[in-house]
Length: 284
Image (cartoon, rainbow, N blue to C red; front, side):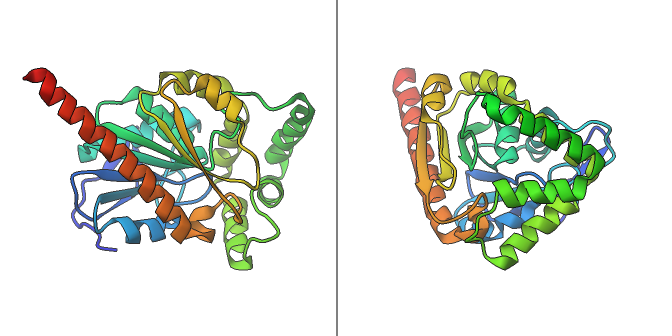
């Protein structure tokens, strides 16, 4: 990866936000990782796309090399961190790409700071868009919340093993994910996980305001609720399904994921080009 040196620092609310910048191009792909991971999960995507695009990867606050000097940890704040990065780097023609919780963060950014954004791609996200968990799972959620507060490492590990990984996940990937979940910064891990469990109303509100088509790449190890997307996705959506991986396709099947990302990116840029042609015609 060809990294850009002498990068401007991103400081948001006195907290250092680490990022990496690679490649060159009129379009910027901004990749945002999910819970307890870091920018390195995107290494295969950076290698693949940086020959044609400017590629930016971020470590969300309290992840990777970013700071953790903050008292509250919500998805809204992660979204504000993404916006701060876009503003400091003065990014334009940005396609936001987020995984899991990172997809919620880019949803915040796309709605609250839409001007430089031209596209929205979510990976393993919005499987029950804007919808609360079924009643039969509510008690399980309450138990997880309480256990996180008393035994974060073990509870976080078990959550990853039972809901995010599969029996087919390669041992080295499984071990990497488990380590990340066990060793996450505890104050952030507790509050952000609880926020995710209760985020559906905010998610619903933002999806309905999102000014872009949602390009979704989900793995079918857990189903996607298409009825919810049909109901709430104001600008429509495109759902591409992958098979044979767990919640982490960028690690398990990077080649296939890159191909699907490429299709979504081309679709977005074609729409952008068509809009530019229409604007030119209207001006004439």
